[in-house]
Length: 323
Image (tube, rainbow, N blue to C red; front, side, top):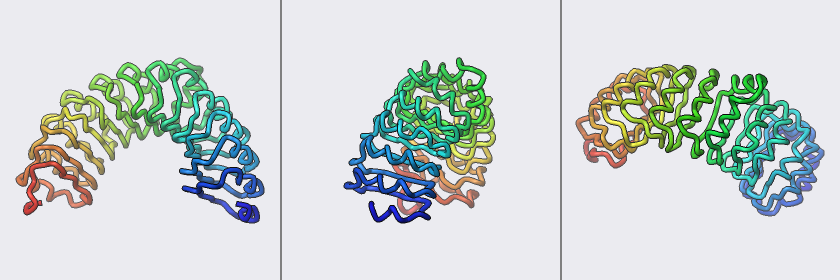
């Protein structure tokens, strides 16, 4: 680590699986041009290791995937005014860390996947006026937490207006909570891999016509609910794997002509008719229909899909000779 101190032109530095670097970040203080720092799977890193990072004013991107980092460690980041990307995935931080994070004026992307955030404190996102991407995957966020997003001041409404990427996977958000998201007109990517989401939740999102990526992997969407998908004409990627779809529901997917990635796995009632309906999706690059009733006879409908590069037929009724 001491040998790095003289690399004054270093712009990017990546530590991964380095088990003995605790205490070594003091040697990074002089790296005045360092813009990107990644620390992953280095479980020797503690809060005290964060203190030297406060002096690297040039940092624009910081990834700290370390379970022992807490709110106290994050407090050292206050003053990194150029920081645009912050990844704290898996760290032991709570909503209190937002006291510091909300003071990062350039922050555009924030990943809190697997952290200990709860509803209390969500209002502190209001300081992030440039936030475009927010990952709350597996946080203890409920409808009450999302409600803060609509109950706050006009300045926070502006924050929401520029959000482009929102991940609520494995949270406790329900259909009622999704009403908060109806005003996110710039949203492009939305992950709702949440068991509590049903057709009713999808119905309140139909105004998000700019969506290009929608993940409903574990949501309980039925054939009836797929009619709301027709509002998302710009979709390029769709995951719909709750197990409740039949060929009838695919009728509402077949006209999403911009689709490039489609995952309909785990829907056991899909038959060869599904492949016939999808045969007009000429831009499709990836298709998954695992654990369905697709047979050899259905494969003929794949021929028009000239751009198809990846096809997953695991646990279907397709024989080796025909596939």
